[in-house]
Length: 384
Ligand code: AMP
Image (cartoon, rainbow, N blue to C red; front, side):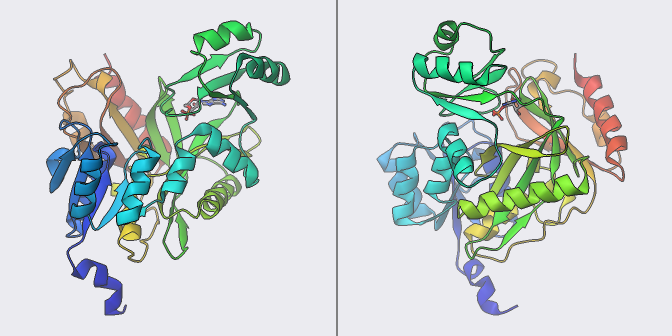
């Protein structure tokens, strides 16, 4: 390899991370491992990335002062969650390079733009209609004539801002219950399973995908990811191909998660995209040579992409707050720590309310069904 490839690591790079959550924390830790300094722009000092970052800016994401500070400290920027004001992303882009681009984040942060984008590019997605008024909802419900889900156009994640409908309700009552907000009505997909593909694309257009993960949820929050997903080779290849197509169509630069529903006949529809590292890619820290976080840094620092090869089958278990004995007392980790091939990651969060993501564990093994049994046993021991 020529020396020039490593030029970006010769000078002191400072990666600026917008957002202070666990994804930011894991990005910063990956940066440290590569000798790269970091500055985290967070909305609150309790955020998980704060205690591992070199520098922290704790100001709102629309603060002009924070924008100036951030761009002075960072040599390159990235985002760890998508709900950052577009003007902030554009402001950063005027001063330093940002990966992914504000345009790509702007499409993925809004369901209406995201669905229209998929449709325009001929990428399979669920039937949907944009709803601005009660009249729109009446027309869309009549057209759908069956079960669906109403989702807010903006700022939705983990099932928030969603209302499931059977199709026979009074549209006026549904509209009122939903708070009369701009929305997308989607057809309910009776899927067989949910999968996701992490895809990384470099600034010069090289694209690589990771093996699809099979995702199971608990109360709308990701519970386990099984990798590789238990799907046919054809479906896996199609999912990787579609994820690649999405990344190319977005002219995406960085790591992205593409979530799919798998129909009973093996066909696929895209549910949504996450323009950042994704919870269903956490296993890449322990089960792949290059993690999703390192890939993000490699793109931002214009280094060669790393391998996406899965070194070991695995199951990732999210350690949600309902495993905690109370808001401040974690469960007994001994059974996990005694399990061969188990890796524990905790995000340093001090309080464990509701279904908060407190950490995750990756269990490596030879056979995903066997690992899943171990994971289910561990989880059953922690759930009250
Ligand atoms: P989302 O926030 O859009 O990812 O939705 C959260 C979860 O709700 C998904 O992971 C699915 O389990 C479920 N879901 C969302 N949209 C649909 C749909 N159109 N059909 C069936 N299930 C859905």
